Image (cartoon, rainbow, N blue to C red; front, side):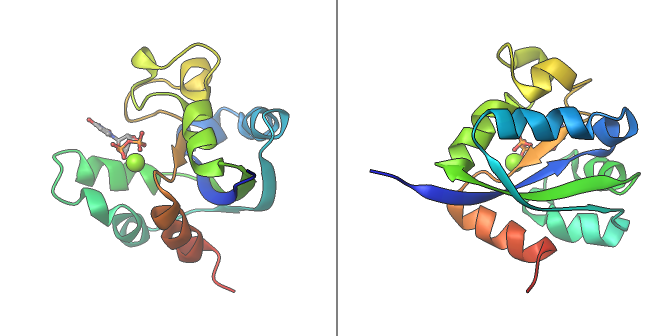
Length: 136
Ligand code: UDP
Ligand code: MG
């Protein structure tokens, strides 16, 4: 049975800086995820801290928020069959060193922090994250 979902994707500063936006967008399109909305923004550290607050107890939280607010990012709503898990599969493991071949993080990621993309990890979080950036 068909299960069309939406998920939130972010192209992080390391990838935007290296002009990988079009390559990453095409990777989604070529793998059956449609880009419903896309915008380039530059978050403040306060906004990044709000977005990543599920990680506030983690030792990497402050660096993560500093990093996400360090440059322009592209936030996108992706739609497709099982989009949440499909996107996570296309992204690859958090640490590019552990990512499967032909995943975004394997192809483009630099390190565990500069890993080129964010993707929602559940349907529930996808709804929250889409609403965070795209309030109608
Ligand atoms: N992160 C990090 N150090 C770590 C773990 C995570 O810098 O030891 C960063 C990394 O950029 C990751 C983000 O924090 O993408 C969120 O972590 P999460 O575990 O949610 O990984 P993801 O869902 O992005 O694969
Ligand atoms: Mg996550």
